[in-house]
Structure formats: C-alpha cells, structure tokens
Image (tube, rainbow, N blue to C red; front, side, top):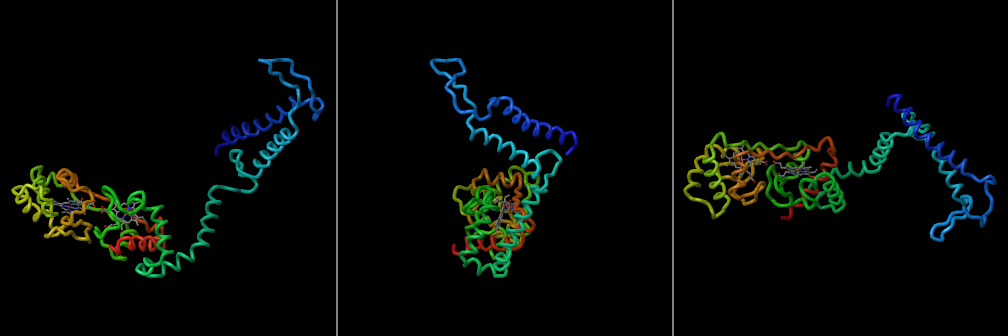
Length: 297
Ligand code: HEC
Ligand code: HEC
C-alpha cells in the first residue's frame, strides 16, 4: 500500500473516532451525569414535547466503550493502511493456520482410507459419505448433485462409460482430466454428407424415423471417416473417449438436428484434472463414490 493511501485511510479512520469523542464532549451537560429533569427543550409539535435530559448513562458508557474498543482494535489488527497491527494478523496466515489444523485433523483419516482399494471403499458407508461431500463441492456444478449429468456432461450413475468405469479408469479420469477430440466434419464431408451420416448414426442407435436411402449413403462415409474412433460396429473406443453410438445414450442429444450439430462443429468436452487441486488421496475417495454409483446398475 502506498504512503498516500496509508495516510488517507488513517486520517479518515482515526478522524472519525476522534470526531465522535469530540461530539460526546461538546454535547455533554455541564454537570456530567445530572439526574433527570422535567424541564423541556421548549418546543412542541402536535402536542409532543422533548425533555431536556442528558443521554442515559448506560448509553453514554457504551458509546465511550465502543470508541475505546475501536482504538484498541486499530492498535492490534490491520486497519490503518500499511500498519500491520501488533498481532501481525493477516487473512493469509489465518487461512494457512486453518488449513494446517484441518490437515492435522483429517490427514491421517484420508491417508488411512487412501491405502484401501477403491472396491473396498465403495462398500464403506463412511468413505462413501466423505466422497459424496467431495463430489458435492467439486463435481456437482457440472455433473449435477445426483451425478446424473446434463447436456455435455456425462451421467456417472449409468453403466455407459466414455473412458471406462473400472476403479482404475475412473481414478485416472479424475487425476489427469480428459479432453475429448471429436473433429468438425463440415469441411471434410460437406453438408449433404453430414445429413447422410447422421441418418446412419441414428439408424445404428436403433431409431426408427430414419431415411433408409440417406442412411445407406451415410454408411460408407462412416466406414471411411468415423470407424477409426467409434469402431466399425459403432460401439466406441474407450481409450479414445469416443462414445458408443449404438446404445441410445446421448451426451449431446440424438435428434437429427443435434447429431448434425455434433458433426458440423465437432465436440470437445473438457473434464478438468483434479490431481493438483484435490490431491491423490481425495481423488481416491471421490473415485470410490463415483464407482459406487454405477456398480450396482
Ligand atoms: C467443469 C465441469 C466439470 C467438473 C467440475 C467435473 N467434471 Fe467430470 N466431466 C466433465 C465433462 C465435460 C466430461 C466429459 C468429457 C468428454 O466429453 O469426454 C467429464 C467426464 C467425467 C468422467 C468420465 C465419464 C465417462 O463416461 O468415462 C468422470 C468419471 C467424471 N467426469 C467425474 C468427475 C468427478 C468425480 C468430478 C469432481 C472431482 C468431476 N468429474 C468434475 C466436466 C466436469
Ligand atoms: C478422432 C476421433 C473421432 C473421429 C474420427 C470421429 N469422432 Fe465422433 N466423437 C469422438 C469423441 C472423442 C467424441 C466425444 C466428444 C465429447 O465427449 O465431447 C465424439 C462424439 C460424437 C458424437 C456425439 C455423441 C453423443 O453422445 O452425443 C457423434 C454423434 C459422433 N461423434 C459421430 C461421429 C461421426 C458420424 C464421425 C465420422 C464422420 C465421427 N464421430 C468421427 C471422436 C471421433
């Protein structure tokens, strides 16, 4: 903080305190704590008059106490610009102390749970509850509080996996994050090609309202351009994060218009990496929670 702002803040803060003190002083009665009187101030409004009484004592003492409190506060804590206060308190060191206290308290518990395999934790109600809380704080914004996903964000409770639903794969997804690479196709196969292959994709997923002739023409486009990632049978390839197109589960919608939009612009869903933000032990716990959601389905 520059000297100018330090002076500015100090003058205003202390000035207000001294201003209040001055106000108390000049409005005091000559006999400081004289008793109540029946004299009035001499004015009257609608029959209401005002007694010429001093401030009640308790009120006066409280006022003085707040002023003293304010001065002591300014002495101990940062409040006057660059002056740090005698306690040397800062937001940062309080936060660090709290983090350290939490680490000391929960660290051993996390370490104990992280040493157990995810399959075992998925049966342990205490671990699940901890994982659920981590999920609510870190994942629910995107995947929903019930982990059922929404447009562009996968449902984690079903058995349909982009990257794999084994404990190891789930944990890997959380640690390193995922960036889906579905290219845009408009420039490659043209608008007509997109319409055709979209009909073919919808036919693969079992939809009835497709144009057979368009779907047939789409089939060769699919074999040439799409099978590398989505597989010849359309069942997807998990190591590439390329979804199964035959199961009727859609990340971005399965209508003709939505499938065409996926093809025209490409799709690049981003799952952030949590290795650094949550750390390995918490990731292990939340993986167990995610695993528990789908294992019984
Ligand atoms: C910023 C939004 C966002 C947050 C926060 C987020 N995710 Fe994701 N997650 C995604 C997206 C988007 C995908 C899909 C990536 C793709 O399209 O390939 C995904 C994919 C996944 C997958 C892979 C699903 C599959 O089918 O293979 C898992 C598991 C997962 N997330 C779990 C979590 C967990 C647990 C957390 C919290 C620690 C979390 N996610 C936080 C957006 C998010
Ligand atoms: C380089 C690999 C790759 C190629 C080639 C590719 N895709 Fe994809 N595709 C993906 C990935 C990865 C996703 C998932 C995108 C995401 O999660 O954001 C995807 C998503 C999709 C979706 C959205 C699925 C949903 O659930 O909403 C459709 C539809 C699709 N691809 C069709 C095709 C078609 C048709 C072709 C050929 C013209 C094709 N893809 C070629 C990798 C590929």
